Image 1 (cartoon, helix red, strand yellow):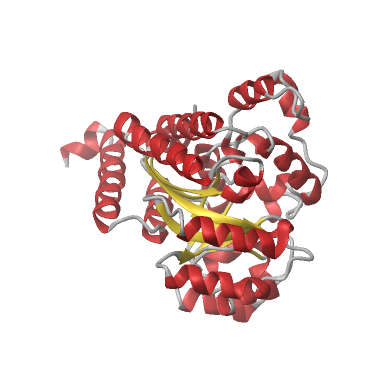
Image 2 (cartoon, helix red, strand yellow; image 1 turned 90 degrees about the vertical axis):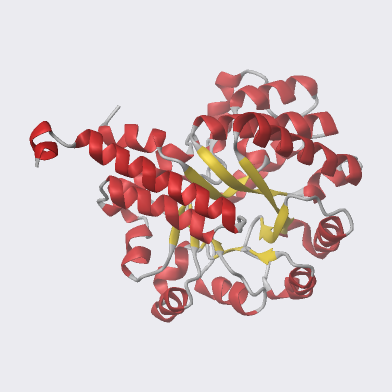
Length: 350
């Protein structure tokens, strides 16, 4: 392990763009597939690597939904959520805002009350046992249209779980205009939820503008196409609107051709706040530590620079102020201790 990889492995972190079902490890997916053998997903964990090789964004959505179909009971929901938190704790993720699509589970027959109880039980258990604080973003699956928006809004307001902090919009962007969801975001915001839609991933910067103007986005999921619009970059920088950047995801879904062409550096040089995230990590063969290592290389960062990225995510999160202060202090303390250990005896003597 390189020094940077070792530093990142121990670095306290926050993650604010990571999907619930998309975070299922091969082990958990295989267990769920064995429970529900009528699904399309392979039972053998080794076969999942081939299954999770995507031709394009549309194929990724198709595969993703096949895994969603394996979440059929409250017990499935609880198992998945708790085990994701275990994996996060092993990566030193102290806080995470997980994007959950309750519409998909409720449509498949899980009672809304039981769904909320399952994720909340997993959340409180994870915080108690692992120390990882989980919060929820309920998102509309865009491909399911306005009926899904109606259902997601009701689930977020009528059945609102304690851990819910934000309202999002995911799924394919092409053919799914953002402005049509304005009434639903207006209601969610009125209920105290924060607006965090995906935009500008597989479409151009106009989708990001729509998310900002019509959906009143406080953060943008992905936003890779923002670099093609200088005025948009200026707006994001001026108003300190963070982009939730997921490098490996962008390559896996073919919205960026090669890692060397990834727009992360351009975003940073334009002064846009960026956070580093893993999106659907097992599906993309990655984890948050790997994404930080990629970002360090793309941005030529030292350990202090990487620690700064970690603090960006804390600052951009919707965590309570005490949680933000505590996690930021842990990041600072860790980085300082690392520097002290790296100093030579001669340097320490001075």
